[in-house]
Image: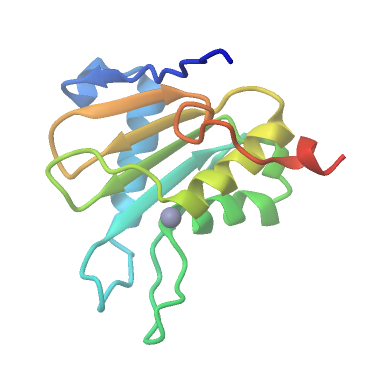
Length: 153
Ligand SMILES: [Zn+2]
């Protein structure tokens, strides 16, 4: 028996001003998208923006039977229907909270799928309505030992 230790490196930015211009812009687009969230049941609005040779925004869209779409998925799907699914390099996620929000399990799997298509680690930016921004390079840290396309070959 041997043990493996998997670690997660999170870069913490205390303000948007510390981020590179393109990533600051992506967060601002996610904040804007949050304004278009339809969240009458959870009252928790989330916005996302994806960089894929252009910016694609998304926000959570709920339904009365609780099977709505999360912001990350609507943004990723926006890039996909523009034929950019394999060109996604960065995603920003912003929630109505005082601390950065992280993607849920199914959204992490969605990010895993597009990262595998892109062939290189995706920058994942996570933020709340104010305060710090978390930056992670690649989905592996957020979804360790993931099941992905390679497992089906
Ligand atoms: Zn989600």
